[in-house]
Amino acid sequence: MGGPPTIENPTVFTPGYSVNLLSKFVRLVLVIICVTLFAFSLVSLLPGDAARTFNPFASPEQIAQIRADLRVDDPFPVRYGRWLGDFVRGDLGQYYGVAGDTVADKFGKDFPKTLLLVLYTQIFVLLLAIPLGVFTGARAGSAFDKSMNLLFFLALSIPAFVLAFFFKKYLTIDREVLPERGWVDFSVNPVEHFRHLILPVLCLGLSQIAVYARLLRSDMVATLQEDYITMAKAKGIKPNRILFRHALRPSSLTLLTVIGLNVGTLIGGAVIIERIFGLPGIGTDTVEALQARQIVAVQSFVAVIGIAFVLVNFVVDLLYSVLDPRIRRG
Image (cartoon, rainbow, N blue to C red; front, top):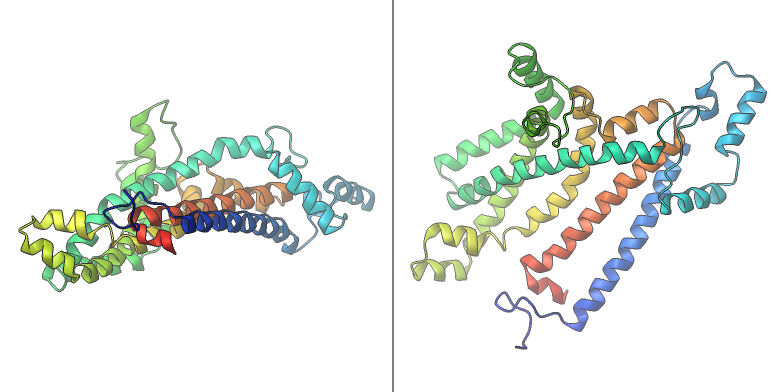
């Protein structure tokens, strides 16, 4: 049952791997601390006086009161420590001068919508990009490969917001094929839920299909030249089994890395797409809070989005050992 970790014996975890895993957790904590520090410091770089934003015609006494309420005159370490303590306890703060939901309430309602948009986009992209990457890699240099590469370059050259306005005009305004804007919860109406998200997912995902497929194609071309692939072909194993069982797995490491890094790209793109299609997600909330100079809300939104990005990449890092157990010895 022993032996070194190999593809055939993927369940072996060495002491060195345990130490490596512990070091990853330590680095994760340090990176999260850095993310919170960056998110808290970012608002300090905004031009103008945040206190005067809430009331441009306020008297000096009123401005002083607003600054006291926001505690912006306290030393930076004190403000950061107080904010971080509240953040760790799940208290994301209040909207200053606005009655109603707290920042945590707003975040709890809208962040899952952005996550669903990103999740649906990733699923849509992978369902198309993986087979396209595999088959173009297996047919490198063919007419099919060249045609798909042309389409990939075309998809990469069109920004998501341009696609959004194009689809919105021809599929919602002119022909009313799909809803123009808004959000419907899955629990209320599953069909309308997906109909409202078809265009946002298409706009976010088309360029990413090109990125994923081209990366996978390049790795597949290299993998298919390996000796064990030649041996599998000599044994008479079916071509599709060779492609998807023997070649896809070792060719997926670069793709897995990009999937993790792409979470931040999709969330950033979702800010524009949410605004265009009227989706009440965290991107829309962040922009509105930034425009209103709601300091605490902006800090909390940016921090949670940053932490989510870090955690996704941490999980991706752990998944490397599943795709290629030899990494456990690193």
